[in-house]
Structures are given as C-alpha cells and as structure tokens.
Image 1 (cartoon, helix red, strand yellow):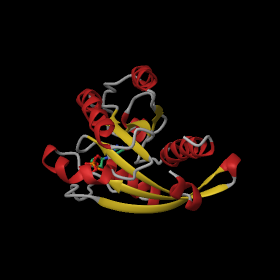
Image 2 (cartoon, rainbow, N blue to C red; image 1 turned 180 degrees about the horizontal axis):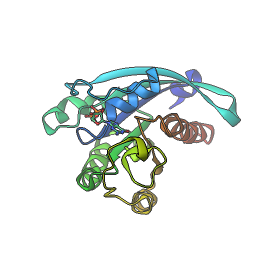
Image 3 (spheres, protein in one colour; image 1 turned 90 degrees about the vertical axis):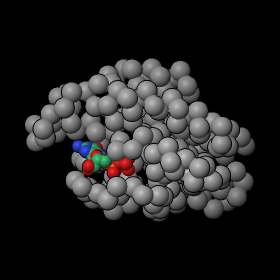
Image 4 (cartoon, rainbow, N blue to C red; image 1 turned 120 degrees about the vertical axis):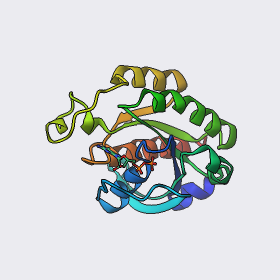
Length: 191
Ligand code: GDP
C-alpha cells in the first residue's frame, strides 16, 4: 500500500452481474453522462477521475476498471484484481438474483484481491423504485431488495454500503469517496 499512499492513485475494480450497471456507474463517474442503451460490456473498460476527500483535503486519482459480469470473462478479470485498493460490488435493487449473486462475486474478490481491499456494496438503479424521488419519470419496477437487507448483509460481511443510481447520478461519486476515505484511513493506520 505504500506506493499508493505516496501518489494517492487508487485502483478500483467494479464487479457484479451483467447488466447491474457497472459500465453506467463508471461513465457517470468519469463523464457525468448516462446511456440508456450502452454497448454491452465486452471486456474491460477503464476510466480515470480525480476526486477530493472533503475533510482530508486530499486529491485522489481513481483508476477504475470495469470488469465484465459474465462467467466467460472471469478468467480475464482475475488479473485485474491485482493491485486493487478498492472494489465496487454492484447489484441491481430490482433484481434479487443479482443481489444473491453478489455473494459469489465477493467470494471471487476475497480469493483474488489484496486482503486489505476496501469493498463497498452498491445497490444500483434506485431511480426505478417506487420509493425513489425520481421514480415518477420512469417506468416503475418493483424493488426486489429492501435497503435494510442490503445494509444488513454489508454489515455482516464488513462492507461499506450505499444505494445509488447511475441514471440520476445519486450517490455515485459518494460511493467512490466513501471507499477512498476508508482506504486512506487504512494507509494512515499503516494497514
Ligand atoms: P453492466 O453490464 O453491469 O456494465 O451494465 P450496464 O452499465 O451496461 O447497464 C445495463 C442496463 O441497465 C443499461 O440499459 C443501462 O442503461 C441500465 N442502467 C444502468 N444503471 C442504471 C440506473 O441506475 N438506473 C436505470 N434506470 N437504468 C440503469
């Protein structure tokens, strides 16, 4: 971690099932855009962004790798765990299956990533839910994963947690800031 501490360049990976919105979160973070019909993720995409950690007044350069969600790409994505300080583990709040599969992705992360890696569980697509402020403008879909359930599982596994929307931008930067803050705290403590 010492090289990371000197330069404040943090490598992040974004993982989770196909179609949960990994590419969209990355595009939202780096480009402030949302594509309703993005190209399906065919491999790995990369994005870079400078963020400021408010109370630390630290500027951190995020280097984010978006890993494909399908089984067939797993072998390729393995090498991308190497050197990662942070991970966004993404599910879709309107897909219970994607939430259940997050367990497998976490297993994969734990098997291949640095044990000190900071992982934030991101429940994406909250804009589609009836209880979301933006839902009036969207075809409403049923929330299949209550916020409390995501939160509880994250706590159990020692993950940070946030619900977000790549479409509205809600909490997207916050997810990266929360994770980066945790990583910097670990660096300060010499973990
Ligand atoms: P990936 O396969 O995990 O990278 O998922 P994509 O980023 O390709 O997104 C899959 C589909 O979900 C696309 O049609 C996106 O436009 C849509 N999508 C992604 N994030 C959101 C979101 O926050 N809200 C809504 N309503 N749709 C989203």
